[in-house]
Image (tube, rainbow, N blue to C red):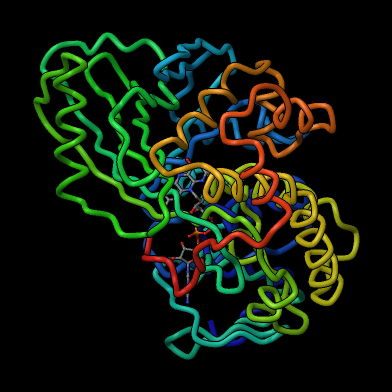
Length: 398
Ligand SMILES: Cc1cc2nc3c(=O)[nH]c(=O)nc-3n(C[C@H](O)[C@H](O)[C@H](O)COP(=O)(O)OP(=O)(O)OC[C@H]3O[C@@H](n4cnc5c(N)ncnc54)[C@H](O)[C@@H]3O)c2cc1C
């Protein structure tokens, strides 16, 4: 294997790296691609969910084989708003991602269980000393935190539960904000995977990243009891702490991650929705755009990816402002009012919001009307430099 040569080396076979490999396999079969992943399975052990309307043009065909569960609609619940929205919601699993990417590439193109030790513009050295010469290197090794940025955290613990009898939940509850509020904005998220299987996640938009796992497990148990669901078995559990970005020094962030001639991708490139912390829509759009580039040399892709990420950062300004309002203008136990008001708005506006494509009119609509937080506090927060929390040191491992 020493001296293996490839056109494109993708570092990290997580969400972004796997989507890039898949897009290249489908749209640029003329290119040799190698994906290098530390874990045995591409994508680790994850479920990623998204709205069908998050998909960029050309994304549906690529993503279709990855979808493990799909629903035609979803609900949200708040003390004064209960709404049924007809936007399809989908989940993809790492098991599928791994299988689909491996099927799309030659067997030798997926180097799983391989640690990357050293990276240069056209050469990658693995932990065991093997080297790979590449026309271009794309670094999608995830984030080691977002130093140079401030905001808050979306933290959660979820359990896949087998209920003793059918739970009766027909569609996802993307936010159940009727629960008692603790530690910022708290809501429960439910995905009914089958008649007797429901994923229940206790989630917080909080100032700090600490997750008290035993407490959250108790709260999930209490939520199930209140819903009339008898827990027969806990089939799995996941926990995450995602940064929610209020503002930051983009140039300093990029300078901390960038190396000459290497393209960055995924959350390592800062490609995440500032207010939800989700990265699937931008990872997919980036992968498709990358596969459409004529010049796939290392220097060309590095420059191109830098421009892509800078545009993404600029486009996120509105969502960062909303993060500031959520975290700095609303008292923690009243943050749910911001979301309750948001979910009274038009369904298409909500879809564009999650896709990161809010129009000027959407923005005005989100900000006008009866304010959910005191008006003058909100204006002062947006215009000033509110005291938000630093998003480094490094995030806890996913
Ligand atoms: C529990 C959880 C649930 C989430 N759910 C959603 C969701 O539903 N929808 C959504 O859009 N977002 C979700 N997110 C947020 C975000 O989309 C994910 O974190 C996403 O996986 C980020 O993609 P990425 O490819 O940038 O990083 P990752 O998926 O973390 O991939 C990075 C990969 O690089 C590998 N790697 C790192 N260093 C090395 C090395 N030295 N050598 C070899 N390999 C290396 C890692 O093993 C990893 O597989 C979730 C996050 C968490 C933690």
